[in-house]
Length: 282
Image (tube, rainbow, N blue to C red):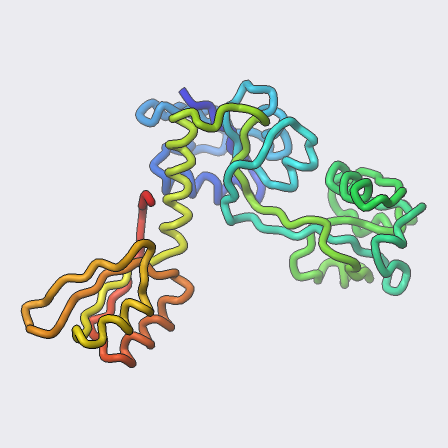
């Protein structure tokens, strides 16, 4: 039975459980449940603190985990990313009072406060910067105001909270994070159960990214239409009862669907429909 770690709370928890549900796995109904066995799929889920998941997976006690790339790197655990999942995206940046720091080279000899000591220390070491890093749990913006540090490193989305604290970001991003599937470093990723699990999640990712588009068009316009909807391998084309017309079915990126429909209509295609894809295997 495959043993999988799932975040039990925070921004990773809900989307992770939703994706697993879409992939056909049972998920807990109560937040107090710590373990759930899905006998039909031969999987056992363990609901753990997101920060601890990489440690459990690296120990070999659990086969796979879903956590953040940031938490994986910050843990220093012997585990590796094997599939990005596209949700819980975040960017890590340095910030300081305006005009006090202009780039990473200015951090030499200064103190940086962060909740992600492992990430920041590694980034500074890789950049050849000798700076002190102190760990704080949450609300790191106040570290500068209270004189604990001259610089902070934190997740930045809009930057509003930093501006409200009188700070500004500087330099290049430290890293970009998102939810990822992880496996113990050196573990056998060819395990059939692991491969099946990954295929299911990849199917969910594709289903969320594409829509199925169906339309009718004149045969003489088919080449133009196919150029607009090439599909993954090629579209499915069927003759219609009315001579000179064909029906076309193809997968189209969801973000482009409205534009493609406009372009198809412009070349004479009609009865253009899009439908959601709930599951797939490529």
